Image 1 (cartoon, rainbow, N blue to C red):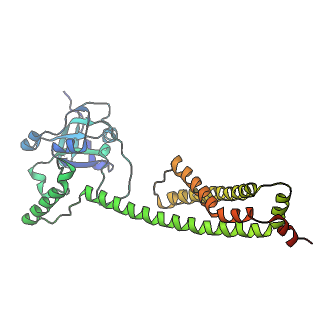
Image 2: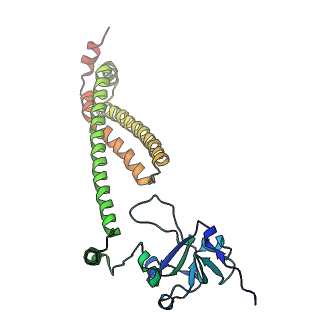
Image 3: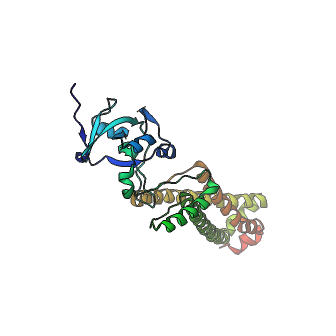
Length: 295
């Protein structure tokens, strides 16, 4: 019987070779498309077996076959399983290296490779045990004289949440100051409008307009001003967000609740800021206003 020629990994730079233990499957939640994963007996017996990712199988021409062999250095490894395709998103380099298991070839971690271990993944039983487990691991490595960087994803997550809270507080403060400044500006504009429109107010009162009608008129104008300002600010915010997304590659998401909240805050700010000018306009004496502005 003719043996199938081995696929040489040296010619395929997109495939990453990883030496793993059987627990690697449970930690990463790996599912198999066919075959089996690495067994503990494979490392003990020094078996030359491997498990390939979905994309690696395609790169090596093994996507339609069960089994096969590949050449890794001077050794030939027998393919005993293939991983099911996994969702994977490209991200920038960070403290934790994210591996694309679709482009990997996994071999048993035996004694020959112990000196070349570059990463050790430890999984705690629950999130409560993570800090204690990290302390124990740090002391153990120190006793063994091993210099290594210990990265705790839970600590990174907590730090990210803390930074997010600080960022939210800063943005909330800026938004509050902006609303106060905008409210003062609207109030000044409305006061100037009332002073310039004394004749109009007096004529409307003379022809039967009640003080409540004048009050509603100025409140409506202020609400319309606040709504228009909110729309303009929302448009500029969308443009700025998409610009940041394109230039800094930061994810951007929007929700209808945020847009409605922005519009509502604009309306409330404008209405509240114009209450005093509108009340002052409703209390203007019509005869005095007409006489003061008569030609």
